[in-house]
Length: 435
Ligand code: DOR
Ligand code: ZN
Image (cartoon, rainbow, N blue to C red; front, side, top):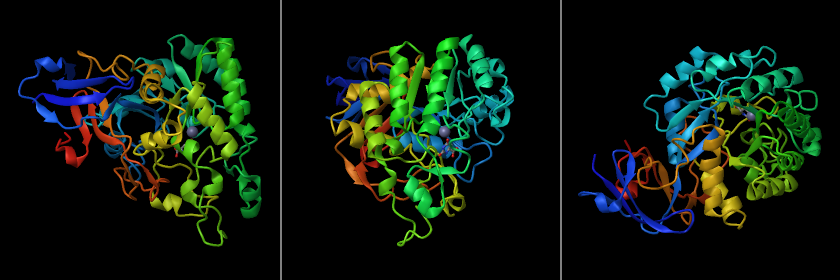
């Protein structure tokens, strides 16, 4: 392969460097021979982004997404690794299912790291063979979509994963306070449309329980898609006490409030637009501000997309019965720029940390992702122009179209994504052909 040379790019810390790529690694720019020089002078570079929370839907949900389409969307968004959630069909709750995902991911446009289910069939009672899945490399376990609500089960899982340094990524949803039908943050909207309310405490009481179980057992807890100010407070409190807890916020919870969600009909007779239905639900300015502050001060360790593709017919229903979830991989960095970088809450070192280094560390893959951009390291990085903007198109690289950012004007920062030297996405203007 021809050497690639990217001249005068800005590192997260503001230094300028040349990046030279040969055989998948960064080499000394003085050593390149007859390189292909790519004109990106003045653009920024970040280590390849890592998403701790992606629903790739394969196997079983290929009408919405496949590993190929989902990782193509990831590459378009600057990601070089995605953790694949276990709520597929069949559920990734056995070594055979984990091996199947790993095999299907050969040839994907990003590294796919399988997440193992915590309980069989995500049922919440029978613990999955955690150790056997760990033998295949699994370190992150999640019943995402469902909460591990049984306290005994959660404690036993913590005791077992502690032995090998695993982590439970919990979908915090108290099943009494927020039963399966819960979907609505705003009580008055719930009342208007006969929807079931999801109070913020439905999340925070589980977070409070879990940080105490993590402290008691010495195990690692990761809190998925934190959405409430109360949860941020509890996580901050737990971290101050040395609990091994980490947390994520999604782009949609950082940008979108339930108040600005357009009605699906002019008279709102049929309720809010189901495109914006997501678990946990979109909130309001108080919670959004607490989340942004939590990311800024490090209480929230990572941005994770919770990219949740759904086929059109699953969203073309009344709000109450539509499937929850929205796309996120392609616009995640754009939303982080708009909500955190541009308002001055996060600098580029912070972005690299929250979107690459921290998720790689939490997911136990820091040997190959979230690496420093120095000679000898894998050529795994994303080149960006944070000043570039555009209107988000209705179709992207996902098979599904439930993109809440479509039609919005947002940054369009990603110029090119390289994973181990392989160009997985490039703006056509660069003349780099993705392989
Ligand atoms: O909105 C959501 N969609 N939240 C989840 O926890 C699961 C996800 C999905 O799988 O669709
Ligand atoms: Zn979830």
